[in-house]
Amino acid sequence: MEFLYEYGLFLAKAVTIVIAIAAVIGLAAGAAMKPKAKKGELELTNLSDEMRDTAQSLTLELAPKSQQKQIKKEQKKQEKEREESEKHRLFVLDFKAGIQASEVDNLREEVTALLSVATENDQVLVRLESGGGVVHGYGLAASQLQRIRDKKIPLTVAVDKVAASGGYMMACVADKIIAAPFAIIGSIGVLAQIPNFHKLLKKHDIDFEQVTAGEFKRTLTMFGKNTEKGREKFQEELEEVHTLFKQHIIENRELDIDDVATGEHWMATQAYQKGLVDELMTSDEWLLSQVEEREIFSLHYTKKKGVAEKVGLAASVMVESSMDHLSKIYSRYSSR
Image (cartoon, rainbow, N blue to C red):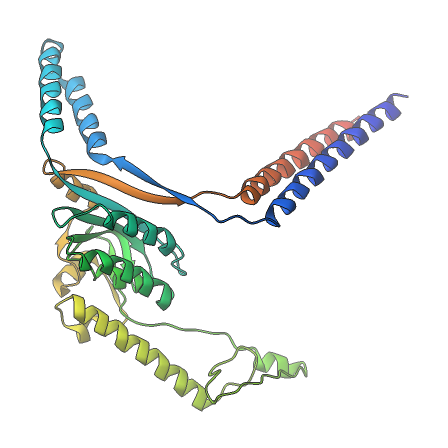
């Protein structure tokens, strides 16, 4: 009887959990069938306040107790003076992207919002981190930064880790590029690679048919036999993109393009000597140098998750939790 009771209890719990999972998945599917336009929101953070609060707290902690009262009084006085005075602003944007540069959508929103309030007296710092990626994605990202330059708003790009290839395509738009000494800079080149399975298919007597209209609609293919003419055309297209890349660099930087457009990358200390960056320092160091002169704001755009995404995430968590729970019940039951 105890065996049947334990088995029935286990079965009832299992069925209940399965039904709950099915209900959540059903809700997610229903929500996905009614997509709504995604909206995001801008987050504005006063970095100057954060920096001052940290400095004031440390000053008080390190000061003798006999002086703390006077220091607090002086800090309040300085705070009042700051509130009454008008300072120019420094807006900070963060751009950390992968190969597809999909983060450019958020950058577009940030730049649009920024240009609606910024003046020529303000400045913009973009903290950039990217090893490069697709030409069209990073070309668009560079164009977003160009919008800031076109409005005559001083633009600085800071590279703490890496700005290579498409990342440097963006960075060179700035009035000034600063970089941490061991950041990776450069790689002004173009790369394309594609596997070819033609010999493997041929070995297994598998035919591959590809129909095109236009001599060079497809130059190289993954499954068909590539021709020398196709390879030459593909190389020609890469050279054209590389030429446009170099022209973009020349329009924004005064340097020896033949020396730097070899596809190599360098540490920032070397890049500085070649004229790829203007100053060696971290973004934190540069911000600290500006905090007394400017009010610093971080501007960040985030997309709100839709109902389907939220429910889907909840379903994922529930499934994982349920499976773990079932595993524990089964282990406890089978051990008897």
